[in-house]
Length: 110
Image (cartoon, rainbow, N blue to C red; front, side, top):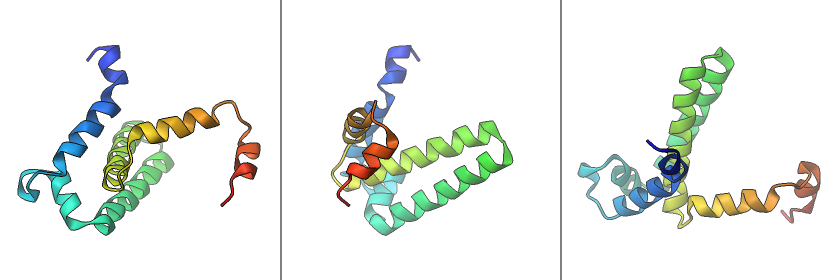
């Protein structure tokens, strides 16, 4: 995989997740998640977050990479389910870039 395609992988994955919305649940893991609804998607995020934390706590770098990838993947499924994209998150991170974390947090209305 080239550096360019590595940079685009989140956007490419986003396209696949959108395409899976129309697939049969029996044909696609992601379509199955969509068909089971938001609670199932959120359950998977919680599961993957826990596994990510445990991998970090155990100092297992390879497991941490894999579990973080799973967490990001399921988070992207949730975003797609909610009509959002990875670009929305990238835009928000870009907006915050260069701001003091303390100032940014204080500026939130909620």
